[in-house]
Length: 480
Ligand SMILES: Cc1ncc(COP(=O)(O)O)c(C=O)c1O
Image 1 (spheres, rainbow, N blue to C red):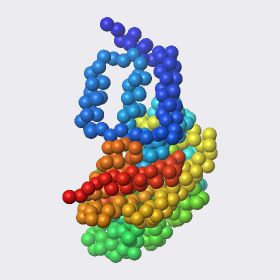
Image 2: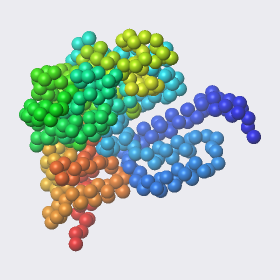
Image 3: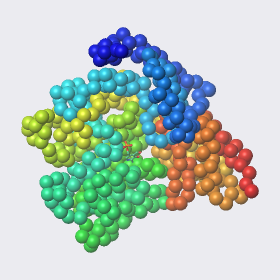
Image 4: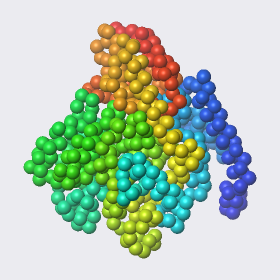
């Protein structure tokens, strides 16, 4: 029986790491090669949850391995493959290989990040990344912010700042004294609703504004909805603009929301988890007009910008506001309540977090900001091209003209009475075959197939092939 020390020395053996690390890089390079080969298929390895569970249970129960290569190989084979150009599924980044290497570096060095002492490289890099993002948003040098673990947490953090600054009572110390509320479009990501509920706002405190025919917030209703909220005794602390919304990629009118928020001294938060990346694009920056007037902005580097999850920028128009979110003392970490920019734990939800800035800084050092602009331009352009392709095919119908790389459409077949069930079934067949990965959404009761064109190397060819496949499944389907 191996004693503890021998086991631990084996775990930390540098030669083993060298050999296993080289082997893993080779495996991943092969994955990247296969993704770029003309035969790249099987992007979606369809498997029922229980059969997948049984597979991995057998792995767990098997004798220990000396080498992780076969285990890693199974992981690669049985995962969805975002790097395949036929990946059109959910909004995850198709990660830049260099950013993934920085992820390995971060995993090895594992700096804690809550305070400068445990992030002496990645804390200043984080400030530089935030300063760049703030500049592109259009903020002045007075702005500031943090990187945090995902758009969900970033939206909650921003709303906590809004509460600290806009609620009549000091909720942090006094608890909820008034009935607080936020205003947001019915198409906003569910995490905004979740954040409001975590903050104790309840049903009445989440005022959902209807959307227009392009699924944008009806900003003409902001005033009457605010009046109605006041009449019910609610105190609105924040209004949230989606740029863009998740289902349809629609951009709310940020200028109109900013005007409203300024008129009523309400916090204006822009949820740009997906579309905020367009601040880096000259071509598509116009979609975000008015974002520079928001009090806070969220933008996920791990969606449009090729950075592995999670890495979200939360930027405040006024840096001092970022220190109002959490007002805590932690003597074992820092012994003051000053707004020192370098002790990040004062401003982040996380105590320990990984070296988020490293992956972003690596891409910037190697390719410059042009990399971010290219990823946005390429995928947003492809969204427009897809709309044109769909318009030429009579068996398909667009939900609406896309504004970015999210496109919703459906298959039309004369004689089919339940097109919703039909489209769901077609998607299921596509997934079972596994050559494409696309998702679905329901808009005002109508089921649509939905692609988010996250892979900058996807081309019109794959889009035509996807439609061919859907058409052939549609023809094969015989109705009783
Ligand atoms: C508009 C919007 N906000 C927030 C989120 C949540 O972000 P995350 O998955 O990083 O928590 C998403 C995710 O799709 C989103 O589209």
